[in-house]
Every structure is written in structure tokens, then in C-alpha cells.
Image 1 (cartoon, rainbow, N blue to C red):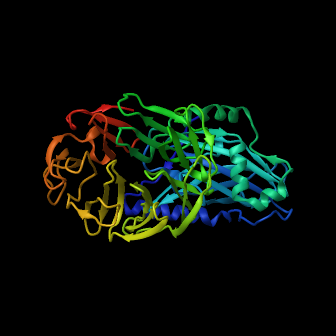
Image 2 (image 1 turned 45 degrees about the horizontal axis):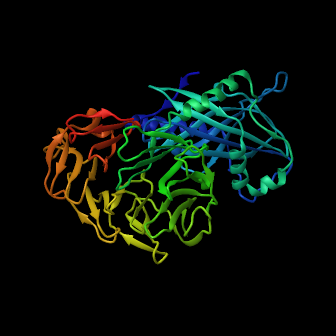
Image 3 (image 1 turned 180 degrees about the vertical axis):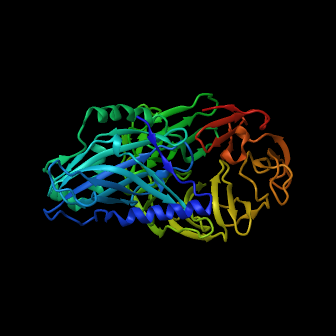
Length: 517
């Protein structure tokens, strides 16, 4: 059940050039197939193919976010004329409603096909998952749909990976109908095809729930003043720890969609995520109820606010839309307005981040443009920070903490909802930073920075970030492995969220660290 994950690290110019040549060769011998358009219908001369793929990386960088195409190989039946070269088609990806989940679609000629590779690239890095030998073949028939189900790719140590499979289910059918309404209406009642469920595919089905349990929590990380900590994950998982409790709760919302936002609401839990995911649990995650969603897009924030309203920020394609409701359980969503998704030339790999403070909820763009919904006035305010943003987070007391860069990296804070920012002039080598209160701060940073970083430590400040002193060691021993740190508000302990999905805990300001999850 193991195979090779061919990933080009592309750390040298020569390797980058080799990757570019490989991609060019691939494109030259393959026929691209455009994703199915919203209004497109079958002509009767071709069939439609739809596939969902999720890569469950244990690191912060996940290939699913940059997957671009699926290679299909036409199967030539024995005795049939052999073409000069096997026919290879490239199914393209739609990004309208997902981030970490990849959905591929296209209309192709009838016949039998196999999946060859999943292909993606990020910057100079090009990678393929050669999954063809791990999946069975499938049939494409004229005027009909082939709904292939959900393929789960679990990267393992080194260059290996495993594959799980979820046959077409009600959730994937709903995705198909939402993304391709004209095609869904045209083919309603007709036969739907999928992978041949051969014995090895049945084994892939059994692997799916095991892969799901490995999904690391890394989306929408938040902490409340009472010490509750929440984080979402891919494949419908989330983690939650109540203030004062030692054990983390790992919950499943009953979906394969990524959970982007987890918040306490009316004594229960409110979650939002990919493809309009909006669900509520009143019994601490034992059961979940689907709520009326204001958007079929990627819900990056479903934020209950002190004034009793709930604001949803959803992205479809390159457009964000803000909605508000006085009762998310009853629905009744009102559209506040829309704005464009923006990128940054300085940090092209960064995506936008949703963040809330008080009755204000906003989307911080990588280029430093902050689109903020004021839930009291129900208006959108645009604020220009003048920085390229690497990360931004909100503390329970309302302060915003931003890692940003112009010429050098630094840390800025805002205590008025993002209208004004104060530069703390921290070292450009700071890897992660957080505040226990307005005076006490902790950072994974150099002990004596100069032209080079030098030795790192867990640094503490007692004067709001003006001066720093060593209090401990970097979590996990490697400063670059730290994605985020935060303070457990119920105990004062430090929590370090590592890029490999692990969570470490320190009760002595970083002198010692222990595995927490």
C-alpha cells in the first residue's frame, strides 16, 4: 500500500530548471481539459468526470493547496489499434469553494480510463503523486456522469505515501450539484459511474477513516479568555480543549470538508469550512446539525460577537463576501458587502487570514490591506497597513498581533481593531510571538541577534515587547519548526503549535517542553 511521493525540493537553480523541463515535457504529451463551467451541459458525444482529492500532510505546507491537475490515461482494449502514444488527458482544478481539498472536473471522450498522477507545483517546486497503480479503472459513457468519489493521499516518512478512498456519497453528490448545476439538472435520473470496486479498492475504503484521524489541526486557531482552545482541520476534524482541562478533545463534524473556523456559540460549538460548511453542536461534539449557510463558498470565519450577532466571511474564487445574522441557528443571513481577494508580490505564497476583535471581523490580505466588517454599523472598512503580512492573530483581550515585512521582518500590534498599528521593532529573525497580556510577551527568537540570527531561545518580555530576556529553549529544539505559540489563559502555560501538527506545552516559561497532543 506504499508508493513514492516524487517531490522536487527545488532548492538549487539546477533542480528548478530540471523541474521546469519535466513540466514542459508533460504538457507537450498531454491534452488539457477545461474544468466544467457552471452553465455547461453534455452534448451527447462525451461524458463528464468529477474527482475530489485531499492530501493529508502532517506539515503546515500541504500539496493539496497547490495541486493543479490530474492525469488520466486512456485504456486501449486488447486487439484494438494501438495509438502511437497513450492518450493522456489533464483534468484541471476548480478553486471556487475549497482550499486544502482539490476538486477536478472535465468532459472527455467515452471510453475506459485510469488515473495516472496528481500533479502540482509551488514556486520552483514541482511534485507528482503517482497514484495510478493504487486505483482501479473507470468507464466514461456519452451523456452520463462519472463521479469518482474522494481520494485521500497520506504522505508518510521520506518519499512514501498511502492512499484511501471514499466512494461517492451524499456529500460529494451535493458538491457536484452545487458546482455544476446545469449538468446536474441535465443528467438527473441517468446512471452514475465510478471506479470499479475491486478488492484493492475495498482496502482503500477501509483506510479512509484511519487517514482522517491523522489530520493535524492548523486552521483558525483561537483561545478564549476562559482558556478554551479551538483549531480546525482537514476532513471534518477539529480539536478543542476546555479551560482547566488537560486532555484535548478530537471531534469529527461528520464531513470530509476542511473545518476553517471553530467558535463557542450559545453553549455549543459553531463551525464553518469548505463548500459552505456550517454546522452546530449543542452536546460538545457528539452530534452535529447542518445550518442554513449564507454561501456555498469557503467559510473562513463564522464569528459570534459580543453584540450577539454572527458574522460569516466566505470566499468564492477571488471574491470575499460578508454576511451577518442575529441568530445563526435560525438563519436569516443578511449580505453586508463584497471585496476582492488580494495577493502580495513580497510574500506570494501567503493567503488571506480572517481575524476578529470585539465586534469587528476582518480579512487581512497578504499585501497588508485589511477589510474589516464593523458588526455594529454593518459596514465594511478598508484599512491599509503598508506592510506585507506573514501572520496575524487576535488575543482574548482584543489586541491584534501581526508579523509583517517591508524591508525586514518585524512585529506590530493594534489595540483599536486594526485602525492603528505600533511597530515593536523586534528582530527580523523572530519565528513566533504571542502575548499573555499587554505587558508580558513570549517569542521564539535569537538570544543575541546581529547580522545573523545566532542561537535561539524562548524569549520573554515584561514591558510590552521593548526589551527581552531568555526564559527557556525553543519548542522541539528547532525554532524553524514552530508555527505559532500561545498562552493557555486558564493556567498560564505556554503552548507551541509545530509545523508537523504536534502541540507542545511548557509550565516553566520554556525551560522544558512536553508533548501535549
